Length: 419
Image (cartoon, rainbow, N blue to C red; front, side):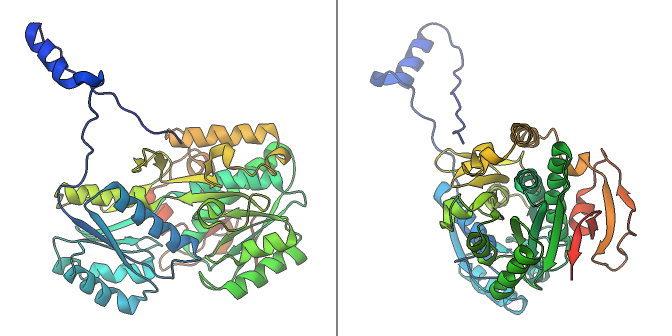
């Protein structure tokens, strides 16, 4: 990524005033001084309640990295946190942190973040936030947020679909929920677009382990997918490193989630990791911080940001909310040097094209493709699983954010959900 540069603009004056102004600005060095760095004018303490441990997890690890980056960018932003916070501990921890100066308090998973909404009215000058899983409850100072990870997952799907030689791809998944179903749909659409372009058939197998972080079960499922279903590309919708361990043992390709696991954690290397998607939660947290600093009593309470939404880090790097990344490289360059020669030039070109289009807000896989139900998924109160073959959304129609975040409860037609 390249730094975003800006050039100062000078007003045009006449006569002596112009000479004096330029002399003062340029000085003896021959250069205009750099503009003063913009930063917070008052202290802000960002408190994140992590549902899991940070070390060794991609989800909480990415949130932790995000907050650290914001503290580096803004001199007056302080980051504090608690780990392994369950729903019963959310409110007591939040109150303790507020008493110690926290003014933005976030739960990084919905099941333990939602209780923050119950105390939002008691602290009108504090921003509260929670990741969205399916509940869209909001209040004036209770912000709900999620990144459009499905965009980067679509690019991962293109790469995975091109890489498989057995025609079998496996997903170690947590449990049926809208977040998982939506993200898996983005990946699956990419796989199928690659398969169509290359004139081959690719099966995508999904097997659930029952929760987000179950290392032993994740390892068992990954081994089952590799041995019984002959998958030669494996990815996950869980949080431990076990599926990656199995990919390395079996010498099959791994596609990562939530974080550049090679570049930031040093897990494995690009001989095993074909690509990952990297979530920059800091882009979303940055919106909250800037609203807070502006004294906004009515901040935007739904943040659903994607590849066209960016922020600039302390070192000048401009990053979108989500992107494909591997060993600290982005875009097509993120694809493993060992994997890239195995992918056709047409798919590499398509990955680059779609990435650029999404970063400009000109294309989106969920607009482009129809949503046809597989007849499997998660029945919700008032929203049953659509019958198999039902066209829930036609191609080239924009689904609402509310639908994507709260009602996308069915697998796409053709996915193989294992018991």
